[in-house]
Length: 225
Image (cartoon, rainbow, N blue to C red):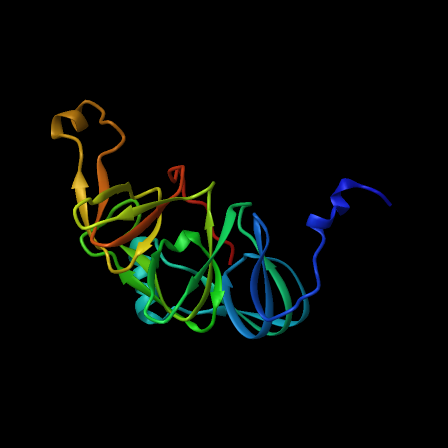
């Protein structure tokens, strides 16, 4: 049988070591030897002896998610084998975190991560009930995190004398040491006349970076359970 679908770049290669790698721009391969975590419904294929179990967020996490609509429904993947993860054909990127690193990520942009990373739903200080949510996901510790993005992300440096203003519907994540607040960029009169569509932005200040996607969230899509 012949087809360009069988091109070498589409063929799965033998696993060489446990952990995650990019299968291609739209999917992540994870060689599981013990436990890892992924967003519910993101597994697209696996082989080996693996079990998938819904992972709770604790009472506090569930309450935050119920109030804000934000959060990250997770599953634990345990055993030995290989699994592939993807979400709505979004682009995938792997972030390596070292001890002392801290990254805040919007829950909708998390695909999977090592069990060695600590994960917590945290309040975005100064953000209030914005379109991006009052709570985001804080990752700390040592390990790898796979982030998804609708399109290629834009990484903007943040310096002490140059705050960055981002649309709450476009933000993917930022350095956790940055301070956050809200900025209203249009007058009451402009809002009464229909507004500019850019009423409120998240302001980030300090030393670090912010990641945004080249599109705004237009509607909330149901998450598979």
